[in-house]
Length: 355
Image 1 (spheres, rainbow, N blue to C red):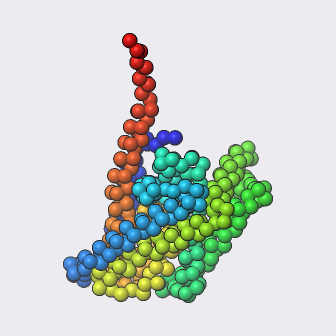
Image 2: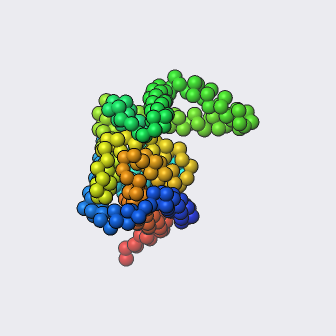
Image 3: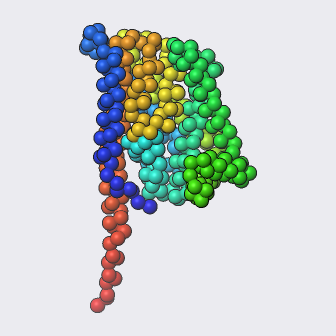
């Protein structure tokens, strides 16, 4: 295995530009004369609280990865798990659909001693459980606590239905993956017929075969992560719930710093569909969509003149901080991998001949 040597600067610059543009639009649309006074009187202690919540979320995510490893019989050191996650955060922040971190995360775990298959299972299984955990959290907040995600009744109803359909689809996919030996024909037939609508039959058949292989691999990874009794997978799912709650709590904390007191659970519930939609936004790291989505979600929960400040501070903590810390980690990781490759390529020393 090797670390990809593709230049990342173009993707980083595009992601930064989109984030800056979207944040600028939000600031332009919500900025008022009172915004300056709010910014000058911002209580920086709440910024430190928000930073602590982000760092706490990183720790919870480390526990999640360690739980996944224990489910397969491996003890992943805290440092290795943190490095693996930060690499994933960084690459997800600069790739479309936030999916770019998987291969390097697998290599990070492989370099720490996990077999490639088990490392892939931990990463792919974790990603699947992340979506499942977020969907469950959304159902609990929106339907269990009957929270609204928008002041507009029509938008709120649409979001509720989308969240419900998404969760049902995800649960159905989980069952199909768990019984993949029975469901392969069904999945393959659906995929092939769908691809036939847009491409030549032979090309559709090739692509359907690739999807079939990916489904089998994902099913294998999910079974490995869940293990024999599934206890560690449940611990990992609980750690994911904690991770999302901590990340979502940064927004109310930042609002507190400006003197607002938004309804905590409502603001948390607003962010669930935003993060779910982030995985289908084709821009690098979902840049642009997340900023505009959060700004729309905060309407009627905090004063309009504070929304731009909150969005900018939120992205500083959840995006720019990831780029800086994750970028440094990636730099040292690539250098370390290059050093290992160079040492492995050196010819062995000639044996000494006794006189």
